[in-house]
Length: 281
Image 1: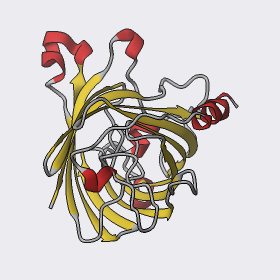
Image 2 (image 1 turned 180 degrees about the vertical axis):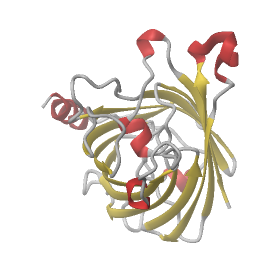
Image 3 (image 1 turned 30 degrees about the vertical axis):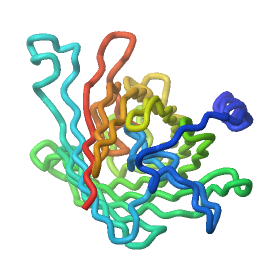
């Protein structure tokens, strides 16, 4: 209930900030159809998917990298050891549909993101986007689980992304999520899991914004060692790409990794530095 209260308060305020943007084709409002374009500049806020889709015919290369925990100090070279990397390609099939394929040490991932409803100037108040992912756990090894079957590796992720661009400076998003892992490692984890994500962007200059996202797991047991992921970062726009730098309590990049298996803790300095590099062709 407290998450619903937060959402109601945030969506009840209207920010009246205004600022010209050098990348007007991304941030402008269409005069013809009155659609408010792109509450976010990149496909992800930090870890959470955003409501931005690839335009028809555009091909994106996304390189996401998370170093090890900075708590490792000199023994882990302040996080430079034990890094995790994901490489993903995203293609705009149509103006309302993007398909992606990615691979990291954690999972092979295939996903679709599609527009359901767009925010309109003086009209519909939010943008609604669907996101569905099919992942294959790459961390499970046959040597550790002799009876492991291929179906045990499968993970399903379903999200409804709801964003509002309040002004040229501020955007906010809500992301109710259901994900299912066919195989879980611990008794305190359910195969079917629910979470709700919150994310926002505040633009501080024409090319720089501050981004943050957080996800609350809704059916985790009290004995679980895992925590809710909190991430804070900076987006820097440089011509044809967006460079995202951030600190996050989750080293996981795939949805099931950061939503269900976050081990970091900001209060203990156990956080991970990382970046997302986005290039469009």
